[in-house]
Length: 338
Image 1 (cartoon, helix red, strand yellow):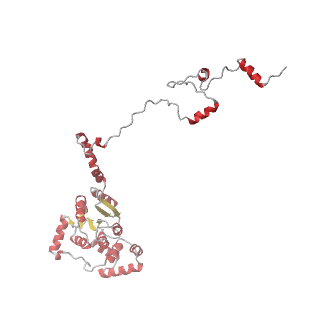
Image 2: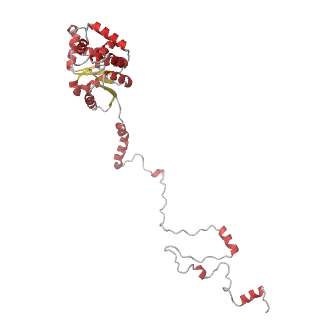
Image 3: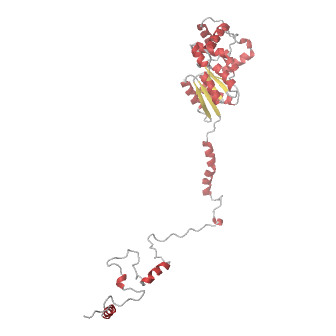
């Protein structure tokens, strides 16, 4: 049997009509090849797939490489809103409209800086309170709370602490109780006026004797208020002191005037003519309060020997014999309260 060559086999295959039929021309494909998979439909709103252009293999990559066409986008969100128009400057509303409807909002905006300014608390006075009773200090705070522009900068439980806090905080006004432990209001007033010249002192007390008033004024206090009148007169007294003016109640004013008109009216207590130094008055108060020499030395930051020397001088000046006599002297002269 004669073998058929390759060319002869191809010729017989083409002559017999074998294969898929005639070779399609470039750019066309049978409809069956363009229908896609059988049973597959395009989603709603999307156009069905059309004929896929066919090209020889040597032209496909060239066409895809040089084409800039993109498939049409599917509009699933609806049409886009129209672009915003730029408003010309001439069509913008004026800064001061004449419409009455806008007048009220503009007034509120104009008043805003005033409202903010009213909410800022301005401190016009700083006040120190000194009393050995917490209940009294709380009552003074409540009386002064009426003035929101006043600030309580410090509180002290005794006269020595009041002097230290006054020197540290430099208040405008120091309110002192006359009867305080360790250092009474009289001695505390002297020290505060010496250390803080710009601080005015107001003394609260339960007694209003002529001699007591004179000593308080001599110590440097400009205001003298009875504790029974504090709720009614304390605000007015502080206001006067902030202007560096004196303030006295009616009874105290009468005593001051009577003493000014008749200086000989002042009653002289035993031993009063013999003046004690400020340090000796401090030691008299501490001894009368029952402090030992060691406790006094620790309080005043001095040696025990110095305390003993001061006590000896005090007893000699006042012509006293025992500690009991010294306690009576302290009570009689208002250094301590019984």
